Image (cartoon, rainbow, N blue to C red; front, side, top):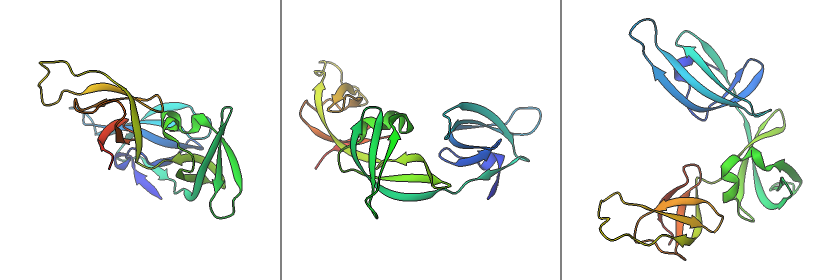
Length: 187
């Protein structure tokens, strides 16, 4: 499906210069002179290269529709992550860097969504939010009464997040996987 250059959004998968690219960031710019354009930061899903491209409103680009399949995360084997197809129980190994920073949030038995292009897995989607336990949280500094005062904390998977002052070590919280941000206390 062809879309206009100014309709590109983060998360879109595009076919560009004979490659498959995932849009990371977009910035719409309207200079004083000339036409508006979309500055797009993309990552190649096959070889991992990154690029910045300007698309004008007159430009069209092919938006790719990926097939998705449910998988379950099993375990880590060296630099590889092992997943199992929920339908036929076949196991596949994927490189950990395919997930980027989100790999730290993988948990045994977690349901994930693999995005496939021509029967080849090119992207793994984790749930938007996961529960994690705080193992280390800084003490609240007296006098920090600003409403937006958050303090650093370390989760059981080693990821650092900012949490409200009342959250202490040992507390289970819900974390946004892709923003690495505190959402709420776990139930």
